[in-house]
Amino acid sequence: RIEVIDREPWRRCWACGTTSNESGELFCTECGASLDDRHYHGVLVNGEPQGLALVPEVSDPAARALLPEIWDEVPDGESQLVLMLAGRGEPLAPPLGDLEALHVGQNLAILLAALHSEGFTLGEISPDSVEMTAAAKPRLRAVPDLRRGGDPAADLRELAKLLETLTATERTTQRLSEEQIDATAVEPGLPDVLRDLRTGVLADATALSSRLAELIADKASPRSLWVWVGARSDTGRVRDHNEDSLLSLDLRLDQNNEGRCWGLYIVADGMGGHSAGEVASGLAIRGAAESVLRTYMAPTLESDLPFDEDMLKEVVFNAITQANAYVLREAQARGNDMGTTMTMAVVVGDRAVIGNVGDSRTYLYREDTLRRVSKDNSLVQRLVDLGQIGPDDVYTHPQRNAVLRSLGDRAEVGIDLYVERLRPGDVLLLSSDGLWEMVRDQQIASLLAEHEHPQAAADALTTTANTNGGEDNISALVLRFGSYK
Image (cartoon, rainbow, N blue to C red; front, side, top):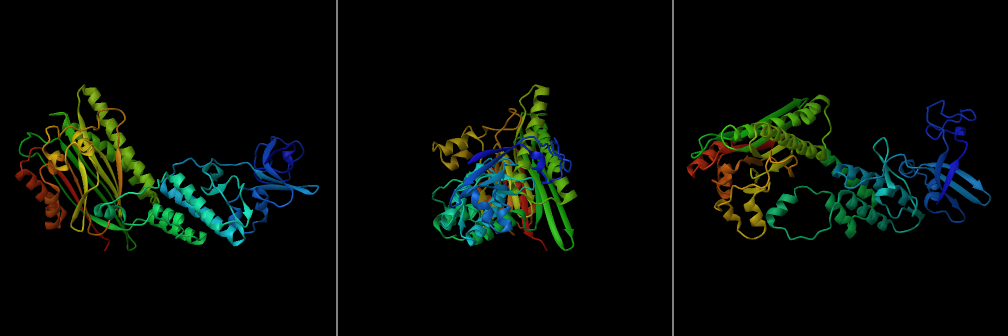
């Protein structure tokens, strides 16, 4: 590769291509671009062309739009100088969100299909050889291995490697329980596509493009589900006041026989004693709710924003971050150690993003099976993970109330995020530890099965927690999902 400097850039504007500028112009009279000396990457072709020199021979317009932009071809005796514009966008910086990576992969699969149909192969693709244009489309910055002939299947394997890098997807072999399989195999995703590429099951670029297009449509188009909510918070039988707070916000839009549903659901378990714990949990809920309403729900209702799972995860993360800031500021102003745990879910159709700090929990009940979605940030959970105590010991361990993370403790708090794909008939349960410590998982599942109406289920869970001792405040949000109409 060689570098070329255009000493008379006024002859042809690099930005708009006009040739109407006069000699010595410093700025383009058509578009205003600066006409300083321009630098171009190029190759000098002698004999059989390869790499950049082959780009002009690609006839498919869609493929050319994804290949480096050729600026000029200049004959030089028996050689040919091929020049390209230097990259106008930024190279990809992994990790990308799944949706952005899928768009990159689909466009490159379209490119490979076109190249293969004309007898070309592309070769290695690295993240720094791909840039995003102003129109949010990928474009290659370099094609050193473009050639005639070659192995199309190798191109697909190279694209799989690129997508693995862009999404930080690890190749792992793991033994899954039946419960884990049910949790992870609701819908096929990018890892399935990468596996099929590596194993040769997916061996055609056109088929790959179709698979990626299906994943994009699936990720960007939540299925319409309606949700019915039951909510109950109770002081319990031992405490003299209730430090828990909960929030249920359900938005529905039924228009032109199409339904859309959004929801925000939070349970927060305050700590710090009278006039502190309940203040902390209430402040946390207000901070999180304000953030979600301002940054997501209001803009979505106003302009019908397309669904983006990665953006929704960011919304939940930022909401909990703001909740933490609200609590921390008040704790510092009062000079006390107030704090709160929080579990929250933002639901859009059949998609739920759950955020968790502390030992309040979110469960998913599906087809008579209860599965805990969130993982406790607690000392006893850490001991379980280390194998020092058994899972059932968390209910009786003397330090079972010691949490390792809480809102209001420090400026930056660790936040766990989980994504769930919901089905008709599913139930999400958000609860404080005052519920799940008093009502074991098997009994929770039985009560959810027995009470189809979510309010009846929330009431039954609370009553049972009190019957079993009611040693702490009890809060339950029960969300049951069903098909739209």
